[in-house]
Length: 63
Image (cartoon, rainbow, N blue to C red; front, top):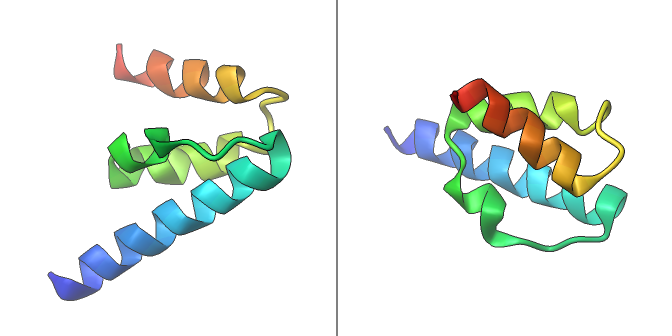
């Protein structure tokens, strides 16, 4: 369980860093995501031109 928590934290840290560098936004939204959403978001950062587009893309998958 400790390893899983460590990996999840690493994923969140990576995603927050990507969001900050690409969009210039430091937001706690990343903290609300599941591990699967984090994995999807890391990939989608490459495709989404805006932060809102990234959030929208992840929101679509929840529906």
